[in-house]
Image 1 (cartoon, rainbow, N blue to C red):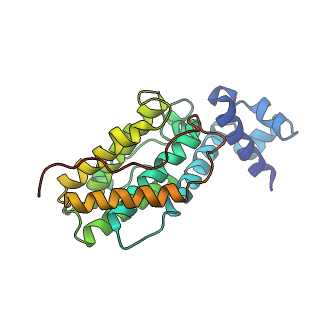
Image 2 (tube, rainbow, N blue to C red; image 1 turned 180 degrees about the horizontal axis):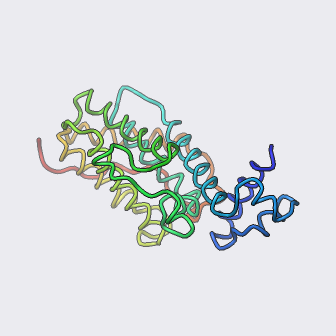
Image 3 (tube, helix red, strand yellow; image 1 turned 135 degrees about the vertical axis):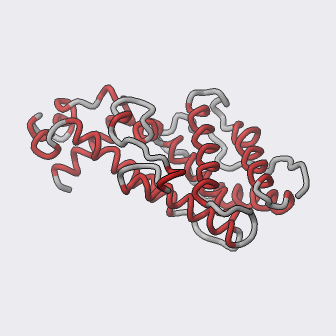
Length: 244
């Protein structure tokens, strides 16, 4: 591994274990046994390192989302993508906050785009690629006739708003620390959104159950970096109401 890559890895470790206040040139250099000047040689300063950390965090986020397999149930795939999203954020809360500008120094690294106008949420390709995973999942649900609409970007933005808002509230402890909000808040919210987009309530319930089973079966042990180590990793089928 190159010195540059070692600095990035050290930065990600420190960010997750000690928070953004731990990210300074002296501490990072000490982590890999180098001089402070090494940070400036490879990144031009801390601003360049912050951007490298942001890009690498989005790369790994994208890999987690891309690992969701496609099946014959496009809606279950979409829901499973949401669970993978939440799992990444739960396992790496400081990275997640950095990526979306919730905490300094991330707030000024990657100015957002108006995705409703440009179709992309960010000015760096690593960030845009993660949204593309969601947009493509929505497009599959549209193509299979499960949901209605003619703007996959806007629909993907609705799902993103749902999961992002849930994740931030859960991180802050508003849904407890045992993962119960997945069952009582997130699953019903997703169900209501899908039904509002034209899906059949019974089909939605089957897809929710499938996503829960798929994600739960492959979840494995809790992530060591998670703040919620006992989280239940999939939503249980919520009650559905209303008819198409």
